[in-house]
Length: 336
Ligand code: PSU
Ligand code: MN
Image (tube, rainbow, N blue to C red; front, side):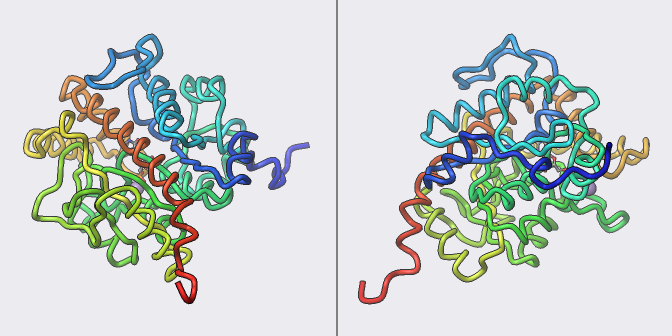
């Protein structure tokens, strides 16, 4: 028959995720653009300091499997979001992750692409923006990723701004990240977050991290939290004042895995120049730059990317666990 799928067909929340949400247990959403368009599809050795890496799997799939087990080990239920044959899944089985990870036709889906992909029964990995749309629909409040999209370098010539920012501005979810991707114009991205009213909460830091590198004095956060419990309290209080606005939680890369910013800056600049020369733009620019940087650093940035993603998954689970406790604390009851 064809025709547009109904809403029940279009969104499927996995039974385990639905049960956890109903019971008020901790749930952490995970994205899949990093599975379909982020990491290489060839196996790689376990990155230093990473436990439980399945080295026989393609690296992209090994990563998604690792993030789910990291969330579980920290006491929360993972809800990996992705589209399979036109259905937006919130919670994927390992087989489903494998299908998406091997599908060379998988699309990179931002929020605006979801409707067309659903109607056309397509499959794809969800960006931060599209994963936020799924969180909003399913009622998930915590989401862990690597680095969000933002304002691209060269925005004065071509105003390329990721929909990740617009979705954060209208979805009440705490996104645990290592800031925004280093391939971006980070000062412009920080200004855009401010303009959109999105709090940036530094987890144990006052500096805005640079994804693969720690931050420095040049870029700050809007609030510093000592630990996951304080992040949760800040989020709950924020949602009392701005109930529809997301929070960017900025967790610096683990010290052992971080790469000094100066070491990758020239690689990023060369990749940017190549993108301009070859006319790569739009949704293709982020995967292009990530791939070029990975190649130029001999896989060193991939290992750091994995360490960052795993650290954020763990921090996300901690925030999700704390959120339940802090929920009843705010707003304080009269007389207490
Ligand atoms: N960070 C990574 N790898 C990725 C991405 C971020 O290390 O693949 C993805 C995220 O899904 C993010 C998207 O939402 O890139 C941003 O793409 P764009 O700039 O086209 O909005
Ligand atoms: Mn873009």
